[in-house]
Length: 364
Ligand SMILES: Cc1ncc(COP(=O)(O)O)c(C=O)c1O
Image (cartoon, rainbow, N blue to C red):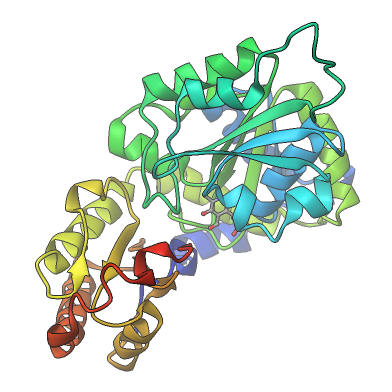
């Protein structure tokens, strides 16, 4: 089975397993774990922030950040397809109790005008107590539902400046920030400097088994640690898993470009198949998203699965595939062959679904 469902499906390498097995550990709740501390220091330095805190998931780092930046009833600006908004179990509402205000991003990218329009124009005739105060603006780089889209730095800066000028705090969901850096050569810290807080994941393209970090000011991270503990995120000898994350951080960033090449190879290999629509140039990093017009995406992925390729359906007509460090170029070529065999088998139905409800379904 070639498993391209997600870069989270990666397996730790022997060297990573060795680093984990031999890691010095302590009780992290008592701030005693030297490996966790080292990881937190390295992440903070890499992102140009004062401090960082290691947690189990990107969902936890994002949601703790939202909780720590806000009070219940505050409004938070999200892109309409933000992972933090739709793919984290409703946590902004359930945990932080905030009001999501959605921005009309295209593949996750919006502009300063969108932010200004959402915040509105204060006027002395209109009581400021009526609307929920906008306290936080969240961006995602690279953007998952946007197909691994990288935020153009100038636009990111303009958007952040617009928020900051209105007193809004800024959080970056940088689960795949490493990929933006690998694709553009712009350092992670160059993106991070525009934000108060940044969440990064080690368990995706970097190939670690567990974990994410939230970076920010010393004061903010101290507050975030309280919320981490409150939701049961206080883990004990976490150095065992932090060692995998540290290994990933130190060794696996440079190779991400191979995953980007494999994603491009996959996109190019399927672009001219019947019943498949994909913009090859939109594949900027490791995420490949394409549209199927010959049969529902759910059925299409079942046919692929029967032939040994595991990918995710996304809405009614979308499919997502992501290569990662255990996936070779030969496996990508094999995957192209499997997709071709299914696409060609249903070729006569290609286009039948196009223009129907197909494009309307929510795709994750
Ligand atoms: C952009 C983005 N942010 C956050 C997350 C959440 O990470 P986790 O699965 O570790 O909770 C994901 C997971 O895929 C993601 O793609």
